[in-house]
Length: 288
Length: 288
Image 1 (cartoon, rainbow over the protein chains, first blue to last red):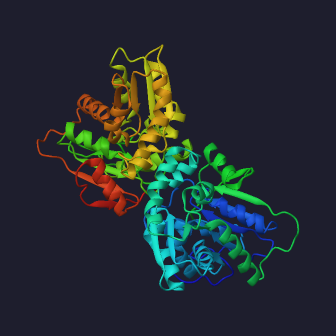
Image 2: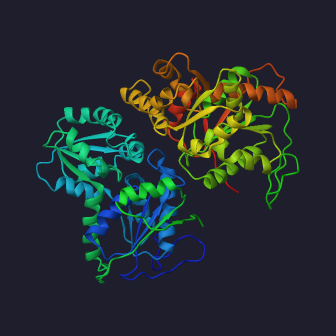
Image 3: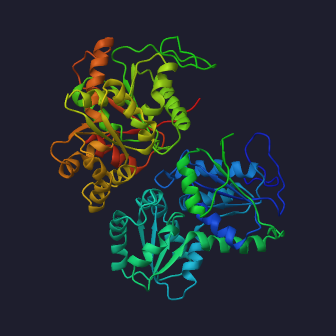
């Protein structure tokens, strides 16, 4: 897999699509579905002038239960779609894709590509008292050991407890956040972490910020919550500043959502994750 | 979409793959994942000599939450894969795909293609007392109204209550069948059906046979359960007999499983749904 050396163009044997992004070019985000819109929402709050292009691979969601090879292939197709649209930088707004595909994407593409793991890990360790760290995420993210590895690289002596919590996404997508079943499920998932005396809980899935109120209720008050969305937005601001890629205008940026499968349900979820209307949603065709 | 008129060959502009199946050719099954193996298990019990080729589109599962157009496109690719492998008949071992894609598949292909809905509906109505019928299924199946329509076509005066139960597949795949959260979820889903006085409950998803013991516990004893797996196996036997396509040999048939994404988890689930070892699982590549 050679590094692509012409603009941010696409690799591969065929014709190169070379679009030279400028500061007003959109930021590209991708996720397996619409959960990554929690990251978009946090970015819109912090960087309101940025134009945003969001790709959700709803035809093949979820990524969290699939194999690393398949996730890498899907992520590669997602990145190619965004590059062809002329984005200036890409945010992998999906923990599973970050965990499995970010290194290979960095190897293959020259465009800045940010994941959600490093920012979360940095934020978790910004508090010097953080020593016993729980991580909740999809099975794919936990089994990748990406969070565990990133934490261990930065600080020795940490006690790290990863807990796969595959039922949380379906419950959130049902909007059963206040349902007794969700409390039952959370209790089963959290009890072992609480027993281990965690001081920090990393919400390592873009859906989970919606659970923050109920998590605060269920966890001891001293447990600090670190989510993917706000930490990623702060990291993105720093990176765009460093690269001189911030949009300078003071008007409010646009948001364009592309999904590989459209349905009323995805629209309802998009509204829930964004906390506002998603506007007209476009149908994306990947591949090529 | 013209009817394909050469053998059971594939349509489309390219070269036709024409394999003339014989009685010893395998039966083809497809599903979005491994849930359809409950149908395979029922068929193996009823027709032990048949060779079986199973395709699970695990890279794109689930189908239940996706749009009708996307489901039809996926089902079409699944059928083409099986036809190219020389199967003699195809079972759509997936309620969502049957609901959305079976009519268009019948229009396009000449090979016998059976779904799981007609057999279930026939079985439900085989009892003359069946008047108040509940259906539990994925959102896609319920919203297709395929069951409601098939029931209404066969008998007037029925009271039909469809209930989308999207959390059941994730809970079954977690093997949380005996977990208190599953009881909570089932209570929430079943209470409205019980209040409506259903006499029959159709388990309109291939995963749900695994819930039969707990459903029997939670439902009034007079409610009759009708599942997709055993009813489909009986219907298949009748159809193969009618078409003169039954395998005559008295040896035990083979089972070959192809999945579009492989993972340890799918192997574990396959074993659970089949109630025995799935053997070596092959990686399937669709398209073309």
